[in-house]
Structures are given as structure tokens and as C-alpha cells.
Length: 171
Image (cartoon, rainbow, N blue to C red; front, side, top):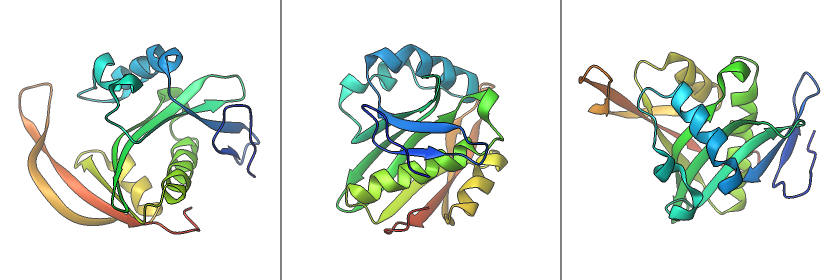
């Protein structure tokens, strides 16, 4: 079910009847996003990289629950009908509860509305949970980038390049 709240772009009601809304990221969200980023990513982006004022992103949104708590976010870039998912995360307490699925649905709807017909992403080879979620959402493995991601121990890890075709039924 789509629900809209003030300043929301899209909203959904999850299977457990929790309302989520998608809101443009602004400076008031930044401390929560930095906290989530540091908690869930092996090589987190810095506060400067995540700041919406940097203008490097075409779409940057926070997923907010009915208690106005940020539980996830994404950053994308769009060029000539193609979009690239640059960063996405769901706060740890909300992982495994369908929130990532809802966030991807809203992400795809946002990109379709912006005129994108293809969505690209890179994911760590070791991130099996994310890979499974992306495959369920219609992403297919296209290629591999060797030694793309840095690891805390100084080594690197391959990135898997995945692609999904977007359409009016972007869920």
C-alpha cells in the first residue's frame, strides 16, 4: 500500500503494517546516516562523502519509519536513461525484516519516475545477503571487477557488477 506523508516522495506499508516513507536526505539526516554507514559497511563512506550538499548524486533518499527514525538510505546517479546505485544500507536492527526489499522497490520507482530504464550496481563478492536480495529483485550478474573493494586487512575483494531493467512495474 502506498502512503504519503509530508515531504515524502513515496511510501509503503510493509507486511507487518509498518509505514515507511522515502524522504530526500538533508543535513538533519546526516548524523544518523553516518552512524548506519559505519555500522554496516566494511569500508564506510565519510561524512563529507555522504553530505547531500556535495551535489554528486542525482537521487539521495532516506527511508524513515512511522517514528521518524531513519532505517535505510540510498545514493544514485543517473545519466542518459541509466542509473547507478552508488550506496545503499539498512540499519542493522531492521535487516532481515523485508526493509531492504521495500527500499529497493522505492529506489526503482524513484528512478523510473526520473526516466531511468536500467539500474547498475557493484556488490562485494562476499556480501551474500545483498546478492540474494538483488537477484530476487531482478538483477542479473553481468561481470566482475577484480580487486575492486578495499578490505580492513589491506587486501582487496572483487566486485560483482549487476544490472536490472526498470519499467513501470519497478517492483
